[in-house]
Length: 436
Image 1 (cartoon, one colour):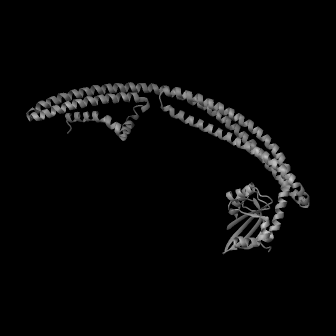
Image 2 (cartoon, one colour):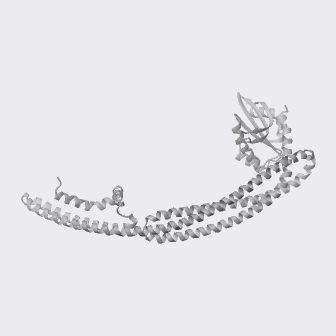
Image 3 (cartoon, helix red, strand yellow):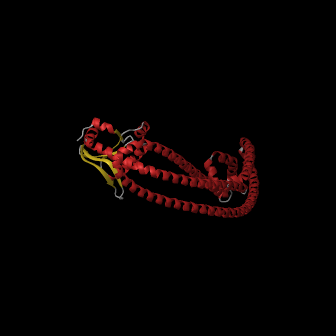
């Protein structure tokens, strides 16, 4: 059974070792913080109070250490003298114990009084904080309403843009029908059109320059939208910081007020940026209208030419396809066609040269496209078409693209970006392969 003397020894040991344990053992420190968290405030609020408590504990530990050193000396001296003085020593020890108990009772009373005062202060602080939170909630509700109004404006703008897109798609469909009709007329005028081709190329180069300027403005618009998204993200991060700041002391309120001012300044800047962006959108739409108007005439003429050249090149190559498939892919051709490949959704792709062959019991699909002077976008479009074709056929696909001439930059781009698409020059078919 624990005696009063044992209690005093234990208590003295705790007073002496507790500060050192708290400094060296994070697990013990976290456990004590968790036990007192429901009753006391966070560390940043009660730091001064704990430092004061630690100083008192440290002083008590030093005082206890001194007392224990003196007591140990007395104890050793008493042990050396004789066992006869044990009773006298016990009396002194009991007296010391009573004094220690009295001191601890006084200390506990002071501690309870301090606790009551702290609880009262925290109640007052919580009331002030709740009042401030209500004010902030009201401000943020007003801010949310402003954001909702801004979202509605953007939705209206998107609807207008989608409507314009549908109208443009409809016009392009009508234009495509006109191009097909024009293609039939241009078959008879091929020789005459050869003389005009060089002049048309110059106009096309000028149109490409205009299109590059339009793409530059589109890139600028994407950059502005990206900045807008970043500004929105920074605002959301600020909202999160303000929500966390509600756990801090009243001194932080002033800092939050300054943060709100900076947020409002950012919102004003954001509003100005959105205004500039709307102005740029208006200018861009005007420029796109001019570009579309100019492209309409050019594409109407070039479209027929491109299709005529493509069909003429295909007709020249078809007699060589069987030998081409055999020598290049080691397959026996079973099907050759200019085919419209129809997909389950009703859409289709027109494949200039479509061939099927067999090799070692497996079916191969040879997919070819013909262009007079292929460009980078022709390779891009063909690769996109191959993605759709792979979903529609069951077998290995071997694509190739034929042209009269490949510019060096286009050829380098194709080899680097689309190494799976074979590059073929039209004159090679007459030199390498036989007509069958």
